[in-house]
Image (cartoon, rainbow, N blue to C red):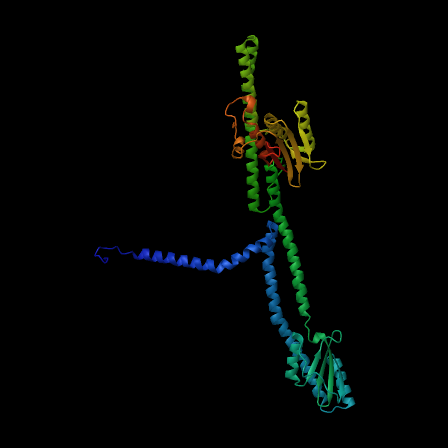
Length: 482
């Protein structure tokens, strides 16, 4: 194949053309499906607000929706087919009995003949009849059926009796009165409503509602038993995330839930084993590091007092302090167990310790009179002490505020110092990061105070955030969930 200018042009392979055509058709079908289901997506957004949020509610909705649809379809079929058919048969049976009575009466019945017909109608047909000779039936031309039952009865009377009539289903309790115009008067027929109304309607409704309630109760009980292991797993995961004891947690429920619970238990055991191994290793490292430092301090004490010796002593003290800070950061207070603690008393103890050290502090207890939660008290005190130490190092006025709501407790430390630039408030939580580039301990410590405080807060399931204090300094906010 050649082009217009005579140059050869490669012809597309048949397989490539078929693939390209198939892809084009798929793209067109996809666009058509998107356009077709687009209204459903618009309707789905408001429906999501009304759908249950819990797994229990959604599972019940999945179970009950087919049941309700099945009951609705069954009810429609019953009323449209069975009930209508039964009503028509009953109406034609009653109309046939009325036609028989009119035929037995004849064209001009005597009093004795009518009495015999009335007796046979009461005994055999369960009908009460009365005859008003010479009377005329008013309203037969304008009478209109008020419901489906009266409509079926009217159709049957028009077909079997073929005389003017009126039907009254409401004047007499549980009775139906039918007035028919004859050649010599008006025949009044009173029958029980069961001649037109089928009792199977109410039986069907009772069975439908009753069975639905029983199935609904069984579904609730079954789903509660299935959801309970998931709730226990979620509760155990939350307690473990908050750094609290999980206790004897056993996998229960369906096989998938058991697998998830067993995976959680194995994860918990591995984490606890790693923490234990790290704590034991750090204990040995701490002992190994303290031993040579102690020997150095003893040797320096035996050398006498000179300027060089004093500088070496200061270096050893600084080395010891740094080693303690590094080990505290690496250890992370992991060996302490959570206990039920009075947080108000804990805040008061911290404020009292600051005042004993000669550091003024303002304590504001804005929460309830009693506030208790499961925490590691020594670790939490260490985190708050680090924040208070940073606050008094950079400011002259320090305050500690304790507030609480139904979801958690807040510790807020404010100062009137220079604060921290907003773009560096996350960096200061990094280990060994200091705003002061010099490593002078008098101006900034080792750079681990905020890191240790955040590590402790997160081990309780909470966190620390930094912001601006109303006094112009820094605000450190610890949020711990209950």
